[in-house]
Length: 473
Image (cartoon, rainbow, N blue to C red):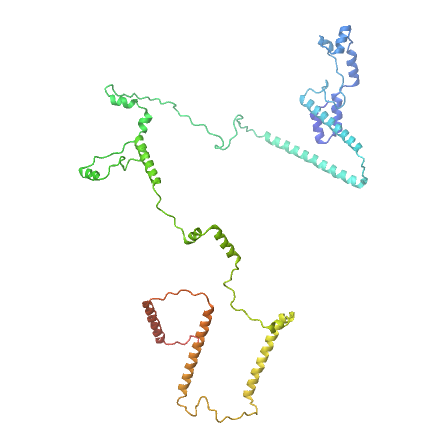
């Protein structure tokens, strides 16, 4: 009889199927019918009434174990995990057998449950039967995949055996400390403090204390060492000379002298307490003094305070209700005549390209007028105007040629004066419309004199410099 492990190896290799392995396990696990009948024949029925009642009721009885050596229990039903007398001695094989039985029972129960659910389902969809060709291809593909998996397992097994054979030649066997802990970073765990080589000093010197006659030393050593050593050292204060004494006599004597080396924390307790009381008293007097400083209030705040709340509210409502005038509003307001009001509205064509058409027509008209004037100069017409003998020439070149230049200069001066007057009138008219009048501070006389001198110097320099021709000429 082959063991369970051998059957599992055969199943992995593909020599036997799963059903064949289960049949062999069941054949080796359960007893045959002849063995069961033999075991039942060896059993003897109870002889007396007391044993019969005890046997039926299930109470314990004393019996001889030698008489039941050939006793065999009732065979367990199929797929029921129970102990059998014919199981292999190996505990692992029995465990594998019980697991297989349990899994098979679970699969059977699952199939039964599915069948019950399918019976309750009334919907039966119509499906096409798979063709023979499709089934054959599917089986071949699955068989090929199974064959590849089996070959892969065989290959891995061969590689493992080859590696084991190679490792046999390795004679070196290192000693491994199995009790050692996992090594890691030294900062992950707290390192124990290194113990001193000597916990207590071995050398204890003998100290000779003060004698009984040294009373002050004994009194000093009786004090607590912490209080004795932590007490601050008093600052060194040299004796003042006579000149310094006279200076200090003139100064007011304060109850707390100021030492340059003595801080506030090193003063005695009662001295600090008295100083705190004095500071507290001064602060109290300072708070009781009348406040002389007055807050600065601007003019707007004063105006607001003088008026009543309702008056201020009425002013605010009135100010909001009045329309605000735009300072940038145009000053020109065109006047529309009655004739313009009676005209029809312009059409889309006139608004789009009518203005440009009018402009082009006006330009053409001006061109024609200019050409006509040129034509008259080049080709004068035969029409001769009437002669005016009484009309004199404005230039008077024939009558008085010597004064021609003077008369021309006087006319130019007259025109310049007229243009200057026209410019001033125009500027005055523009300034009358301007409401903004900035305050201009007149410069001092010496500044004006400096500006005039600088202008004269610049003019002289500009006149002395000769004009140069450009480089490109």
